[in-house]
Image 1 (cartoon, one colour):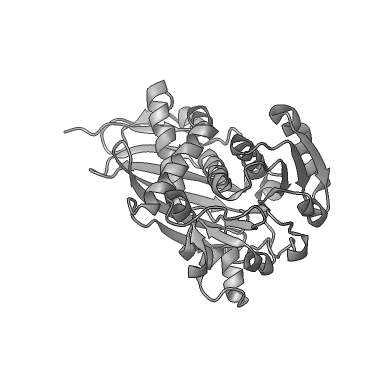
Image 2 (cartoon, one colour):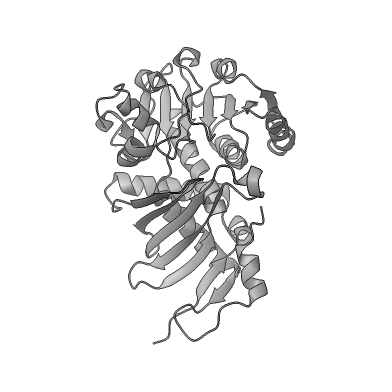
Length: 349
């Protein structure tokens, strides 16, 4: 029996195949399945280098068929300044979990951007006030753009405050996204003052120490903390978590590398069990927002369930549309020629 070829999807292929709305739906379904006990626990492996690090995240879901995905990402925060390269680069390998056949190998940048933003949108659906109109974005890079686009899918956002340590980045963010999303976007350099005005906020920076304070948090705020995806990263004063309803994407993972990690280390939380998991909220085993004045924090470190859900949606869409190239990796068919393979690897963003 000959194996079917593996589908190769560039970043442009993934972007054309996976809409943000489809990604939000896929990620929400994955969390719901996990909350119902229908998904095995995901796995993660990390490796640090002097200037960055690598992580492998893996998970399986039984969707239209049993799928397994493993994402290998490199995360080098100084890449843009030093080499003109993206901070995050990598690949996602998608397999048939019934027979082990490699179904697809795809660029991970677009998958990571979209699934991370989708997780925030899912959390916002359940934890933000439904009339939230003012959003704050702290950090104005590619992830912040995806986050804002996702938030506008689930909330009636009308005004945005864009904050970045680089004032030019915040101005560029406002200039590019205001006409696209038909929103008022005002650049700012004072995150504390901006936070006081916000209904929802998202932090997606590479900060190594907290820059948002408890005294600046208004009642009723929904805050998604996205930047702390390593043990040495931090964006929030742990006192914010103590004053809030804390929901995490994974207790185990957030206790190791998320904002919860710093709250536990500082004695602000006694145990990770004090936090709810998003899967429990989506599945209805834990409540969503409980009152209008409640502060809700979503600690988002990025879990592999999001990756397998997003990768599967991209793969199935690409198959239907005839996108990508094929490569018989385990048979006699030769790989794509050098030119084609180079185009597969190039970051087209």
